[in-house]
Image (cartoon, rainbow, N blue to C red; front, side, top):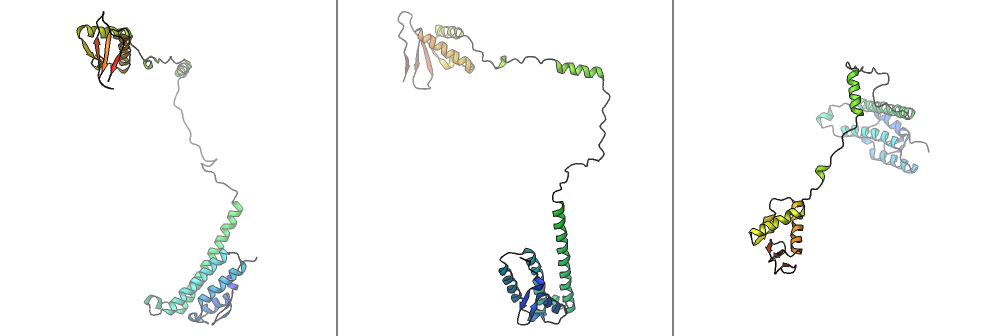
Length: 252
């Protein structure tokens, strides 16, 4: 379907009948009073022409908007002559302004066409994101080097690294016998001992080993263990050698 030519748009108005191009010529020559031109009728005629095509022509719409906007501005200036700024514009100046805008639009349209052709012709080209291949490369100067120093460094790199010790990561468990003797020594001096008091200042690993020693003493029926409530202090008491009680951990 051929494109819409705005200048060849046929108009049927009360004050004018013919192509849009002729209307513009008569307005510029002041042979037609623009105040009598129905600009809304021009818009309706253009919309009806587009509806017949059933396809939107953006290029024709842009050209039409520029021409109609210029006509509306000239018509508004003619209708509101009492405005001081608009009254200074003579009919000859208004015609020159319209002609200037039409010429500017023509130049913009030609420039847009040239850019479109340029893009279509060079669309498969890509620009290098970096320095030009023929650009002078900066010279990198190295300071004086000693062959003996270089050989020494190479020997250091060839030497096998020392083994990494993981001894500091291993858990050191003290012997259970150490805490057995500790509890027996405490109970020899005191009839009753609190477990928290006996292990005060020890690490968590040492407290765990001390608790194992406590269970070992209770299994051998050397002590009795009492706790009033869950999470309450654990109290340790020594038992008589002859009348030792069976292994029972009392807890409320």
